[in-house]
Length: 109
Image (cartoon, rainbow, N blue to C red):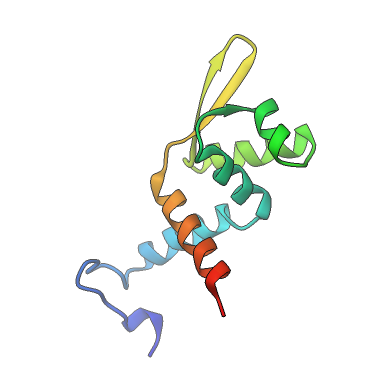
């Protein structure tokens, strides 16, 4: 059975190309460990780049590139306070998918 033939009661449009495109885009955005670490860190609240760098081992330019990707994809929101920019999760769906996949991976036996 192809994925195109699978329908669910709660998602009657599950076979539309738009749904698959949206799912593929969501997985693309979440496709790097660095972005998953950023999402996980921001699940605990809003943080600026320095605070994120304290918990995630990478360079500032690399962190900024991933933050920009997540922001452009509508996963993160940001606000400026003086010279600092604070990031926060604005797309709970990404958090839910991230948690579900990470839980599935850790319980895989």
